Amino acid sequence: MVNLGTPDRTGRGPADWFEAVAASPRPAVVDYAAGEDRVELSGRVLANWAAKTANLLDAEGLGTGSTVAVDLPVGWQPLALLLGTARAGVDVVFTAGDSATDADLVVTDAPSAWAGSPAELWAVAPGDDGLPGHALDFTAEVRVQGDRCPLPVPSGDLAAQARDWADAPGLTGTDETDGTGRPARDADPSVRWLRRDRGLVVAASGRRLHRGLAGAVLQAWAAGLPVVLVPTGHAGDDASAGIIAAERLGDVVDVVEGPEGQAPG
Image (cartoon, rainbow, N blue to C red; front, top):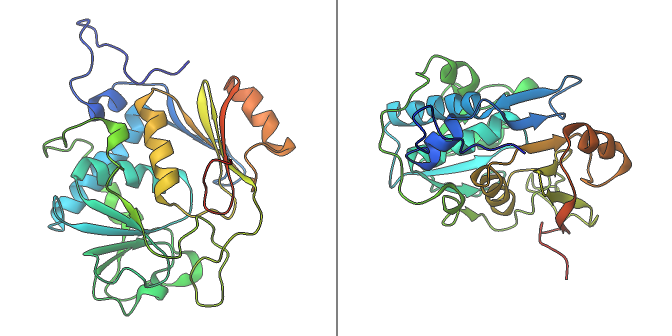
């Protein structure tokens, strides 16, 4: 089993929740949805990306008291960014389209949808969407930041970091739209994620980040478990079975499904 909280050579455990992530050389994120290749981030590498994100936020004058609107799909880089926002102590609202115009910063893979927003704008792998003149290319800028963050680590434990995060109205965790550019209600009650005794399996295909998923991811890392992203719309289908077996994730503990990403029943 992955353990992100392995004691150091002195025999002492990590001093805080972020150090607990950074202390591990073992997998924290395994992404089968990023293309044809398997992408693996150890706890140490994940923490490096998160520290870079927190440093970039700090360099842009964003920290405690600031609000970041996250409009991103499920993927290893957006998950690393989420850990970075937690490290920087900023508030997070998950959104789509232009529904969070009161945020200080919008981070999105669709920057043209936010071109009219007064908020600062960061673009994450926008592809053919284009980059508005005032937008910052997050993927390029974050790479030049330091791997260590000097900011104080927010108090509490990792699993509690998403407690005060929120979803904007209408967000359901899918990237299917209702014609306005905002996510439509997903009529398919497919399994969005599976909590297994040795990891969290997340269906990444067609999914957008939202508070429920973010909380499940942080809980997995807090428990020292990897988050495995499968390239399907159903975390428990036959296509993901081989991945689950290969990653040795153990037995199912909990199933989360339905249009709002809530546990059934």
